[in-house]
Length: 120
Image 1 (cartoon, rainbow, N blue to C red):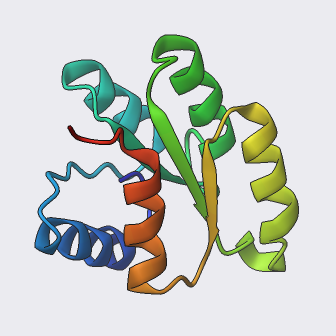
Image 2: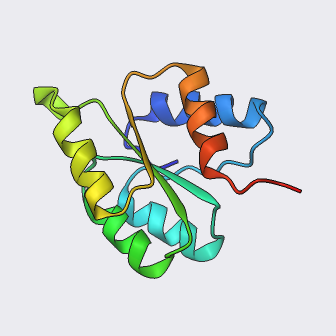
């Protein structure tokens, strides 16, 4: 999970770990890419609005370096509340799925389940 808001990182981490997933967190796109290079995740969840390297740029890098990674982009739309446009752009740049913030716990879990390969 890549997000610059500590409370969101903590909440998503707890939700996913309680559901049985391993979670690594990063506070911006650069740190998220470094984590993905160290230990590739099956699903990368990224916020759009972050300092240093935003989520859109992060998606471009992820798609280039890790073409098989599944990407879930999330946004509340920044200070103008324009999540829809940014999430459409995220899809265009390579995000496999998007979620508008705030989202419900079950919405997050369903999005992750939908992105993961089916287990035999």
